Image (cartoon, rainbow, N blue to C red; front, side, top):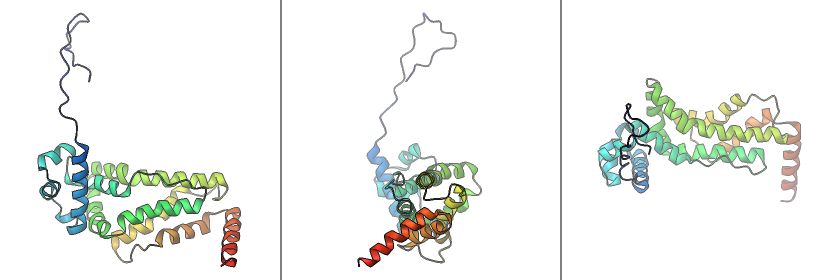
Length: 225
C-alpha cells in the first residue's frame, strides 16, 4: 500500500509510514456465511432471510457480515453466483452438448426450492434499485450469458450454427425457459429441460452440416441397439 503524502511535502520530506491494512479477510468465514445464506434461503425463502439469522447459522456476527456485504441483497446475489459456479461452458467439440451442459448449470442452480423461494422476490426489488440491478447483472446474469455466447460462437466457427444467427436472440431463448418457470412456477424445471430447449433452438439455428451429422450419429446409435 503506497503511503499517503502530505500535499505540501517535498521530494526530500520523509514519507509517513504506511498504515496497517489490518487482519486479512478470512476466506473460511466468507464461505460459512455464504453457505448459511443458501441453507436459510432453501429453508425459509428470501422474504424471511435476515442478517441476524445468517450470522447465527454461520457462527459470526452481523457487523462481520456488514463488513463484507453492504446489504442483505448483495449477500444473496453473491450466494446465487456461488451456487451457479464460475466454470465456463465446457468446450467438448460438440456444440449442442456444450450448450446443454451450460444451460443445465442454470437449471441445477435455480430449478429447486432455492430458485423459487429467492428469485421472484429478489427480481422484484431490482426494478426499483438500479445499483442493485447492476450488481445482479454483473455478478449472476452476465457471466453465464457470456460463457454461453462463447459456446455459440464456437458453434459458428465449427460450421454447426448459421453465421447469420442472432446470438442475442438465441441467448435469450436458451435461458428464458428456466427463468420463466422459476419466476412463475407454472411448470417444473425438469431434468430434460436443458436438452429440450437446446435441441429446439438448434432446430432453427443449426446448419445443414450439423443436421446431417446429428442425424447420421443418432441413426447409427439406434441401429446398433
